Amino acid sequence: MPSATPSPAWDGRRPTTGTEPGATALLGWLTDPDAPRLCLVTGAPGSGKTALLGWLAAHGPRSGCTRRRPARVLVPLAGQSALGTAWAVADRLGVVAGTPGDLVGALATSEARPTGRAVLLLTDLHAAAEPDALARLVTELAEVGRVRLVVEARDDTPALAALRAGPRVAVVDLDGGPGPLDPVEEPARPLPDLSDPAAVCAADPLLVTTAYVTGSAPAGVPGTLDGPEPSGETADGHGGLRTAWMRAGQSLCRAQPPADRALVLLAALGDGADPRLRPTLAELAAGAPWRLRWARHRGDLTPPWPGPVTVLGAAGGPLEGTLLVGDRTGTVRLLREADAGSAGRLAHAVPGRITALAPAPDGTVLILDDRGRLHTVRGTASRPPYLERLTEAVSATLARHPGTALAAIGGSVVVGDRLGSVHAFGLTGLHQAASHSGRVTAVAAVDSATPFVCSGGADGTVRLWTPGRDPVPEPLADRRSPVVSLHAAETPHGPLVAVAWGDGLVELHRPEGGPKLSFRPGPPVRAVAVTGSGSLLVGTDESLLCLAAKK
Image (cartoon, rainbow, N blue to C red; front, side, top):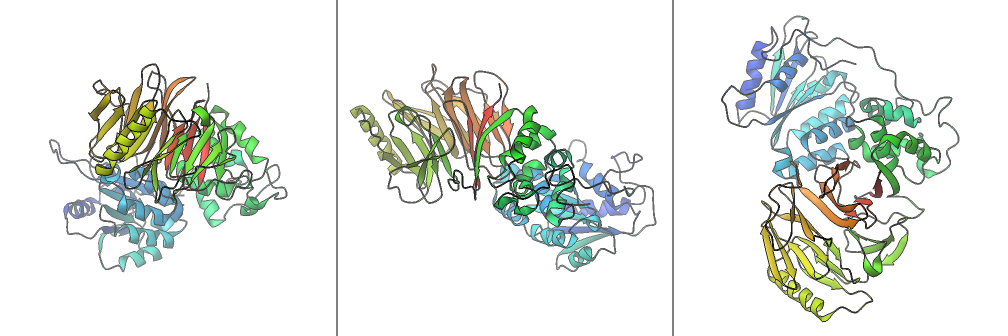
């Protein structure tokens, strides 16, 4: 498989000998706002095409230039499938994509902060595993306004000919003779056994993805899990490993130790998989910082998958040990924290989509709908009159000024708004803080020895605030991706804050000090929560996971 590494003779400061005209043409294309969004770099073997794209990826602005340039993302296509390329590009641009189509949609609709404008530099189209499918993906990406693409391939590549025939394409042709700077062909690496979890976790994820997509590796060899298939999900021919890999692929393809990859694969494994896989993957994941308590996926039967997750809540008081899981239709299911078994449904009549759940200590559940209005579902215990009056006052306020996020603790209701402010309605009055630049996407309130409010925003920051005091000036977390969900709770290990960002990352923070832990399930994360026991819940369109941090 060709390598994308330039020759050691190349110092990165100037284009390689013989490619200077091509470098000039590429820089001119980059700075021309009216140029086509797709540029093809062609030429014979040895003409320096790959080295030129490597130089362009590293080429910086002139000294003293303050203008911020678009990110340049180099992605080798040698040996790649269209799916693996979509995962690699999504990861580099800060979005989450399960399929090539998802990538195009995510880049077309995502907020500007995580992705900004970018130039994709795609090398070795001629050596790709699925060149035709990749050419179709390139064509679709070239229609996304914030992305420009440079694609490199040899002259005789059929997929390149199809791209060249497009109506809006620039071409840089390096037609010089053979030179020493193009990559040298490497011998093909042996394919891993795709039914062996240890081999899959240790192998190059590019090879694993391509082999699962194209079916180019055997489904079992002596000494691996190649026995009879015991149940439905194993129909993928690899005991359920392929299904799990496809579910969590973007996370699995990141650079990480085999133990962390084994944990992600274990968390993505359905209940129809070969029963020998789960203990094997758990042993391989022994070095990871998390322990998987349970996982429920679309198609699971024992217990059944609870449905797509849009909001999560972990209840206390009369509902201690109960999880609240809301879906797109507005249905809120009650699950047992111990095993995700069904405990009924929340009896409510909220029309439309639910955007936040806030279980109160007395068993009442406050709900924020997609119009920013407050609804109350009373528990079995009677509420004190002062809490009724507080809830009514908040409801009246949100009817005039819709909220975007919601939380509740004893005696207080916390609301975020679209202008970046957080409002704490309490028995002693109203406290407010201008915490974020842009919409507040999530809030949480912790009734600890020192009660505090935690908020996350579209600006990518997570901030702490004690009502009645000034907000903590330094954010608890700050990333170039919007916060999509946040939850906090007092636990036996102290207060914990769980945060999910738009690029698929979940983090568990300890505000009182201690290391943060991270986890990427693979698909977009819709909601997170921390239980009273300190476990982390992660909800997606396909799955609900429960993880516990190792001591």
